[in-house]
Amino acid sequence: MLTIKRPFLNQMLNHLQACYPLEGCGLLAGDEAGTVTAVYPIDNILQSPTAYEMDPQQQIQVMLTLEAADWQMLAIYHSHPQGPEQPSTTDIAQAYYPEALHIIVSLREQTVPVVRAFQILGQEVIEQKIKIT
Image (cartoon, rainbow, N blue to C red; front, side, top):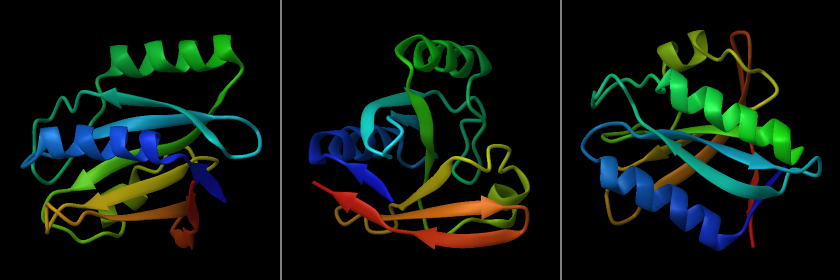
């Protein structure tokens, strides 16, 4: 289970809201227990309302930062500006890090974002719980 403190959740949601109506994306770092310790917004180089690709230079820099801090990449997050709050076929096909959760935030109702987390293993999608503290 992923545990995230409210300020980290708000940081992620604020980033995704700032990207609206385009998809926003980033990484959540944390400890072995699954507790988020940092949020890393990353530019979506596709600048698209229906797809994302993380800026590779920013992504590499974040990975190096995580390694130096002895943190893990707990989750990859991105928004679906018009919903739905579940992985698309593209999200499933591009799930290159099976150990990380995939957090999808639907902004269909911008003032009431819907946040869901999924483990994607091959073609299998399993919803996971998020504990907000």
